[in-house]
Length: 79
Image (cartoon, rainbow, N blue to C red; front, side, top):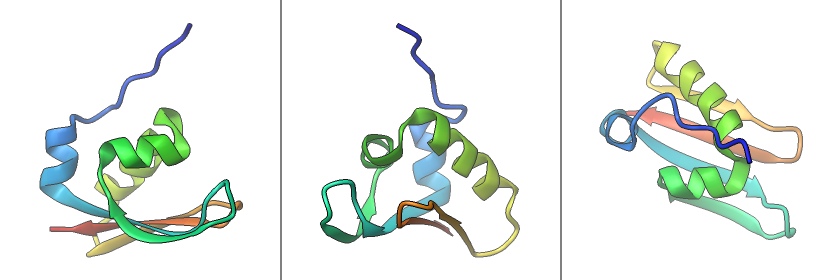
């Protein structure tokens, strides 16, 4: 089993961002809530979360929005 690890610690992520998820999950339910690191991993997985976090840390604005084709939108709000 190949396990992937996060590029950043949960302490770094929580210190720098609020993560909001909106859209429709895999079971067809609407979601619009703040999630933690474990909630984001449960929705999209570690590899895709690493990609989104790299994009969010490189972003210079107040908010970095990452969208998936399946209808989920992740917003990383800088603290």
